[in-house]
Image (cartoon, rainbow, N blue to C red; front, side):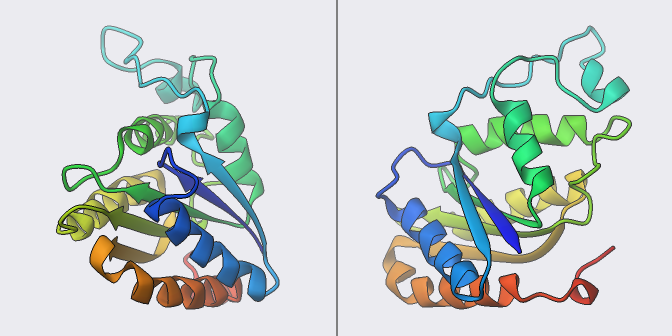
Length: 189
């Protein structure tokens, strides 16, 4: 199983990256292949709502008109067997880079063929809160909502906070192992 992790964090050594790393270590220990994409290291513009009605090619053709790194990342997701969305929590919600990416991903999913390679794909969401840590559950709700609109099969959501990250690292590794060994009959079609 090839799993790609989409990270909405800027810091490859920070709390969010460490959580993603623990999850991916679990996937690897179960024999899975992994890849990481840091959205902040790529050029991802926010949705332009191209036409007066607020839509554009996304609705008509299932693709985005903006020429940046978005399409290449979507193709990486489509080529993978599974995906993990891992975001730091800002103000109880997704990071700005994750929001910009998922907003556009949601829009292409409404067009013909836009959900192809996305709908039904097993997905895990991981939301990592620093500071007080109380926003992680709210962030998970927000992430789940957008992933389900796109059509992903959200099999787990894991809130992590600064105060419990050490304990959650073991849970993330074990979740990664479980995730990599998921039989296709355990996920939605």
